[in-house]
Image (tube, rainbow, N blue to C red; front, side, top):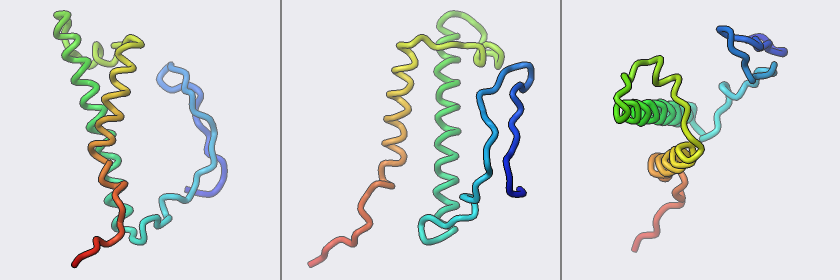
Length: 115
């Protein structure tokens, strides 16, 4: 992408967006963990975690709809609006999943003492 400011459409599919124009960074070309291969694996792991959470959230909504005898169609799932209490529960579940899945990335990398 050429250097310079990137324009963001204020309306997409008749819905207002909340994004703002931005300057594209070159972070996708940086090496953070001493190896571009490890960087790529971490990027994949983070993206997969996001996909898993999105799927889990949709499953939770589908189950709530089923309890109310409402069809779990794409439209019904996407139209679902959680209550503030549900949002708090979901956030706690998301945090717990992130800690469980990514917690090992916080382990010390110091070699274990032997002998």
